[in-house]
Image (tube, rainbow, N blue to C red):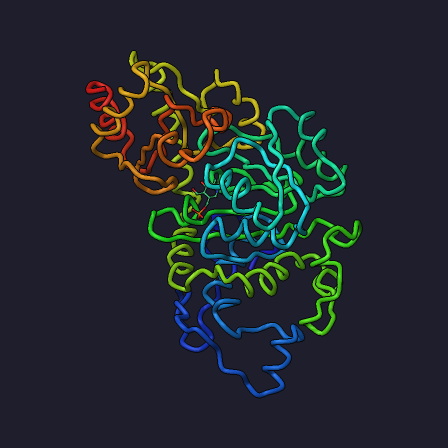
Length: 427
Ligand SMILES: Cc1ncc(COP(=O)(O)O)c(C=O)c1O
């Protein structure tokens, strides 16, 4: 065995996995069980008291989930990870661990529409308050931070706008104010961008997208960067104060640089329950093995498609940071030199009506509310994923009424372009 750090593709296949100790099975088995038998009563007591680490009940931990967690932590360069039943479940657990009633956090206004809803509406009932910022206006970010601000949240590559965000600049602002930077890395995946290397403290994903990659399983994950001092300010009591239900232990003292992942598991996941099923963890693990191959193909296909569609006479504009003349190209080159991802938006000269005809005429593309599938996908965000937002919020999020979003799959690029071409003729 060589001493050098394994490369990304090797980690994508091997990290976290061993041949099954009981059967020798090489692929990670699906441990389809709700619960695990204790060795004796002492063992049970030490598991429940966090004195020993082990499986109790699949809502909290399961061996198939554990392999997925270790693999994503390795791919992101984090200390630990926690898998959840969806990306939104991951976000809920992150903020539950960070926020107290009355606290606020700063979030970029260029986010997936569901996150804008979750933060702006659902979180209000916990008395957690979001303050929106324009990620291209860093002064406006800093001016909103006050003594109740507990975090900054951005997407490394924004959905649906397809723009890269200056992670390092956000990390510097967050750290200057003693708060963590949380990055949703769903659209880029760690194959393109590893936010922890640029200063992020926590990374979240919807595993439902590129990481699972086949449009068949919901999942989410929280990756602990192990970088943030949760005790210094006293503003993160879940991590810095004794936990009565665990015999008074202080999670940050006991678990050090993976305390955040532990807190999300033993407090948030335990009590809110958005666990991933072992079967979904297995399917997503299988997807992860080909992430580098798929992601590169997604990027290569998308660059060809965006370059082609930009010159089509029915197309008013294209926003894809992989194009050399795109405003976001320099940031893309700095953060994601292997490619600009698979999702981009464009507008049709015929506006909304042309957009409807175009979407209905497509044959290879599927019209649905997802991204990051092997298949090419299309949607009109303003009437679907971003429908609940105000017109101003839609435009700010890159989802105005004329915008069509494509998620380019890994089919033959000539077939993808052929389908777009025949549908544009009909638009
Ligand atoms: C960037 C981004 N983050 C988070 C989510 C939420 O993930 P999930 O649908 O798995 O809950 C999505 C879903 O589309 C997304 O695109």
